[in-house]
Amino acid sequence: MDPFVTQAKNRNEQDAQWDKEHHCKRFKACEEEEEESSIDEEFSHPLPWQKIEAEGLDCDYAQLFGKDEADRLFKQLEEEVEYFTDERSQVRVYGKLHSVPRKQATYGDPGLRYSFSGVHLLARPWTPTLDYIHAAVTKTTGRTFNFVLVNRYKDGSDRIGEHRDDEKELDPGFPIASVSLGAARDFVLRHGEARGRNPRRRIDPVKLELAHGSLLLMNQPTNTHWYHSLPPRKGVLTPRINLTFRRIRSLGQQGPGPSR
Image 1 (cartoon, one colour):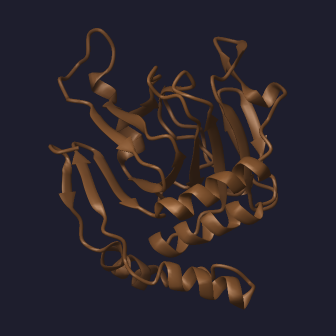
Image 2: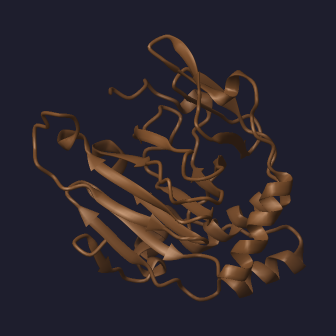
């Protein structure tokens, strides 16, 4: 991280002006007073954020959960999350469906849909643990996400190739918040003009190790210019669950799809 990481200002300070201009109301962690009090106490102090920057890249990284809490959440997600096993566990490449090398599930507010690579995924209702993590992310960042894509990697052989999260359903003004639980994995970002055998420009990739219980915010315009991936790692023998919280627009708000 060294060439790209600087100590960021407290995110609450960074977002104060944004909140003022847009009259942002902080999300109540839970309707139950007892659960709300627990969340408020847990996240009443600002996180020590690290800023990750390069040309057209703006990310923030922090440790959201301690080890014991992260262990508990991982175990609960293993019991609660229902992963797709039908055609929704596949992607379309050059007109053919291929199984993805990981497990996937989608949760969120009623009626939301996320589409990519020829697959359309409807949101299931939030589980108790996803709702808890969702509330923690919202309170910590000050942004109200309404959807989460869950990816489970059984070990280092499971992976995700280079891509951008720039689908038409995504609200372009919102970051994507990525929570990692389980095995630490390398996360690689590569500028779009520095990809391939004959890249147009020489721009060094950015590699991060996403730790157990960590939170990564990919702010705009990162997903416009940079691709990201989770490459295979033979030495990783244990599972990882990744939760990418997003802001999905309603069908009536969606414009034309992004150019690739």
